[in-house]
Length: 326
Image 1 (cartoon, rainbow, N blue to C red):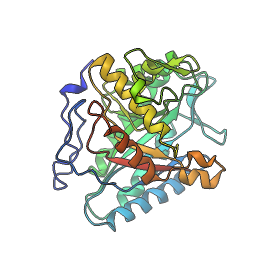
Image 2: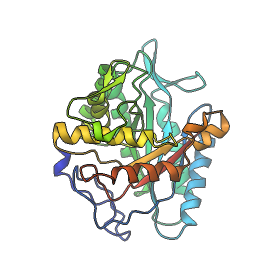
Image 3: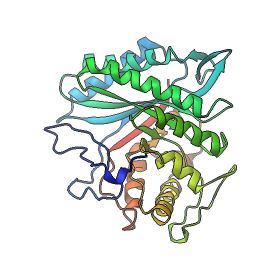
Image 4: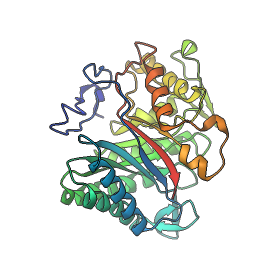
């Protein structure tokens, strides 16, 4: 497996070139300004069809075109859970509808085409096509199939001239599957593609950075910190884009502890690409007030928490997104 420590990070060599490469595993991007990048809206796909997704992509393209400068942001389409109906692989959307894997790219392409058709500059997005780790069909086989789909989507996206790059994604949560099933998904995905996937899940483990050691603490449901680390950062293709919902900083502290554990155990800290919040979703469906960070609060908490220690420091957090139901 290739080592991220050898991979150069040049997210913006200057907006002039709009180049997105993969991050160095341990280096500080010292020249980058630590300022809020703005946020996108991401979506739990409940019942939205292709026309709706096209319009959502178009709206984002218009927003980017109306902003000063060139935008580079990320959007997550959370499709639901892995499923199999007879001999057909697919996903169960959040409304319970089964969507064959052959049809999932139509959702992704609709959003991407809408974005491309309506943007008027050189802005671009990373469009994350994600699933969760809930249910009996999470594992190696589904990971390979998801990776093959992302490969195909990136082949198709060449017609969009750099406007959209597709990424895989997983909302990995310890309460939803065994750690072995989630890690099998990660390994299966990584075996079939070089395109990254983003882990936009949780780390319900130790939240006290000063108490974090080299031995992984429990995260509940049979998981420990090493399991969370592996799904979020173990394979070369894996990058963390975690849920930072808690207004009292608990999520940011939990993920910092995963990074401290990684540094002590493996010799490198995690490099986080962005933060995910659920402020809009909580206004659609009731949430506890304690998990209603705004996009700025989630982004600020994560980057600020990482900067409290030299062994987890990173000077820039590139993306922020806030999820809603659609």
